Length: 235
Image (cartoon, rainbow, N blue to C red):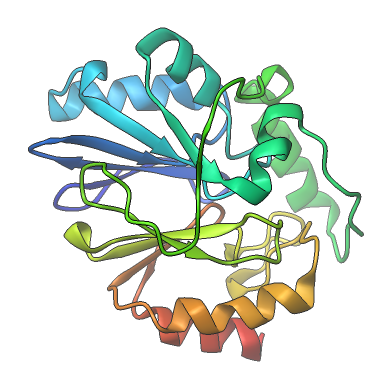
C-alpha cells in the first residue's frame, strides 16, 4: 500500500511494516510476520526494484510480530538487521517477560490470532545476527534513519525517524488499533513491559518533526507526533 511518494506499508491495520524506497536504495522498518514476505516481494515488483536494493532492515523492537521475515531476508539476501542493544537478546532468543493481557474482546482477539496463523506466525525465526544501535544514532542507510529511544513497550523499543519521507515509525510505542479490543484511535499498546515508562517516552516522540506517525498495529496517523502523543495520553 503506497502511503506517499517513496513510502509504502506492508500488511494491514492488524500487523504492519514499512518500506522506504529512495534512489540510493531501500530501507525497511520492521518485518511483520513471516507471511509478509509475499507482501514484500509484491511491493518490490510494483515499484520495479530488486530485492538486492534493500540496504537494511531496522527493527523497532524484538517481538515476534515485528521480526517475521527478518532472518529470511538476512540469510537469503544478506540484508543487515538493526536493533537497539537492549532488545538484541530478545530478537535472538524470543525471551521476554510475561505481561498482563489487559482488556480484550473475543472477536478482535480471534481475528488477531487468525491473521497470525494465516501469515505463518508460528514459523517465526529468531534473528541469528544483528547490528546493535543506540539512541540518537543516524544509520548509514537510505533516508538516514534516526534512532529515537522509546523504552517501555520493551527495553530497546525505538522509533525510527526518516526525514526524507517526513515520517516516524513507532512500532508498539503506541497503537492506533488495539489488537485485543478492536478499539481504534491513538492509545497505549497492549503487551507493554512497563506502561508508565512507555508513557514517559511519548515526550521524546512529541519532539520529532514529521507528518506521518506509523505504528505496527493500526491505521497510519497523518499528523504531528506531538498530536498523537497527546491523544495517547488522553486515551
